[in-house]
Length: 400
Image (cartoon, rainbow, N blue to C red; front, side):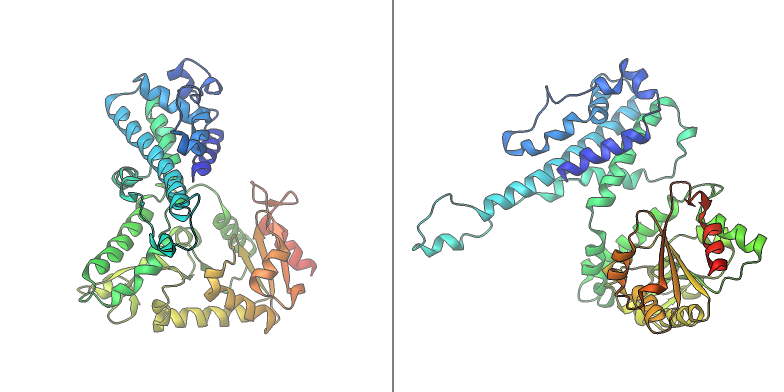
């Protein structure tokens, strides 16, 4: 992660390069901010010094040093900077500890076998590497419109965006769910772990709901599809999504199949039942937000019927259009449906993506009838060859 922090800072710096707040507070260009000559890690951690070459991270440090912000914002900025440095040190320390534990001796007598039995003596205190950051984000995960913020608040918003993206990349939430989901079924035997996975699912659900934009007026793929349905009387058999939020329903006003659960669906682990919260009142339930190794919810009759109905509906269509889906190994419950439709049912699939390779997609999906797969790449304006993606594929379908 030591390189990842630097990349995030660079990326967000590019997004915010047009704001003047940093320049105004610093009285200098951000490009003139670099603290690598005055701050560096211990030699054992020198791999992480790239972070101090970041103009934007250096700018945040200088703003904090010069106390340019209001007291409340100064306190927030301190938490964010400390959290980023803790994560950086944690990543560096993890590599260092592993290297030492794996190579305790530079030289050793191979005939003294006890030297191989020392084990991992050194350990890293992971609890101190990022806890402040997690607590800060949990306490401040309200959705904000940057245009409504004052100049100083935009600085903290910028720093918060960096911290959120770092955590979203380094926290292995999938492993946490996969490793703890089964404890939902044995609360008496594993009460602490049962509470851990329950609290995590509730927290994630709340985070998703509270981070939904206050307005969904911005135009996107859902709007493009809705326009085509309304104007062209386009007949859509069934729409499915791997997203958890309800924006797609609010935009399209169509029946939606949630392939991985949603913020509106709840799961009763005792009865292996999925329903709305209103219909499960009085029972212990958790949000249905699962990764693919948490397989038991898929055996619920509700979810099984959803998958079967989706397959049967897609089997009757002329084309299946898939937008922004990666066909990863953990998505095999979805990949299997698409693979069967292509290989066994001879259905045509059009895949819309960014920098998506047909060869890689065919390999991931294990496709035999490769002529049934068409891959189209869109630009940042959702255009394919200077034509809106939905118009492009409708024209392509007409041509075929």
